[in-house]
Length: 443
Image 1 (cartoon, rainbow, N blue to C red):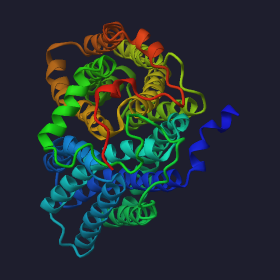
Image 2: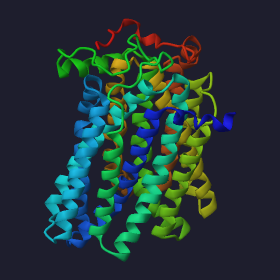
Image 3: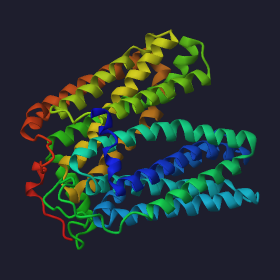
Image 4: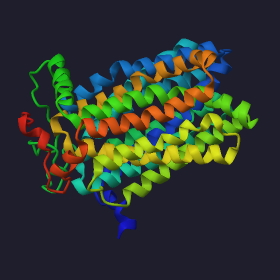
């Protein structure tokens, strides 16, 4: 039944272990986002100090995400995931102890945030590269849909909510201790992953090498050569290159207005406050989670590239009208649509990478995707405020909401995606056509 399709990945033990650990870990990340803020405030810090800690995390993430992709292709993903959770546990446990004994200082938080950012840079590529090694190809869409559901629910809603209660009732230190408990549980669970996943011929086949253990393409190759190989593959693969170009531009045009300027729209056009703004972000997250779960219950569409790009593009259109909206429910509907279309596109995109990118390149391509998504995020947020000083906010939203759909259709035709998806149908037995000119992994 279609309604049970989203649950099929749970039939595989390795996925049950992995998704359990991921869910607990991202729940802890959601708690940390709130606990860290109030720990900074508890230490007497203000916006500048909070920015310092947040920037340290961003530097760790952006600075190491490409290295994380190379590592995911060179080393067993299981060991990388265990190492990341172990490092997370060590960092948060140390901060908890320092906070409980009232010796915690701001620089402790900054270093801790930096290490956590580095951990994320290594975790995401390893997780993405591991999924097609433990699941059949037909279950990847459901697996990505499940992740796209639990992430906003746990990281953006439940985790922050629990941390807020702990801070209010007890103290920021107790909230940090809650984060430590989460990472302790996640660390224990990831150690249950099999040392070598079963060699099942039904597992997803994304390249010429059918090994399941994730051995590197060449252990003797240099880091620079590995990175260059990933960039080279991206440049000569039109659907991948143009999707990343679109993503890069969408981050530049959309993230800043939504994160920086939307609060002023709420204040000036709706007469709302921080609670109104928070509720709108929650609506966007709920839309993304619900759409991701719905996408997980159906088969990957035959026109998978067209559906993904058009959904993303048209989903940005409501953003163009945000500057004209003065009704809370209308603005909420716009955010719901934006979040839902983002959820649909992200599930298809994650599945597409795992199905069509050669296995020995998947870690690097996943990290490159992550890097592109992150690199211009601070630029977008830095530009939004100054631009709003000279350009009306409604113009900024209007341009952002129109540029993204236009670029989506440019990408669709420039990469010949409608022909490509027909020439490369993603059936359960399909091998990545792009992998014909790549070298197989060595086991």
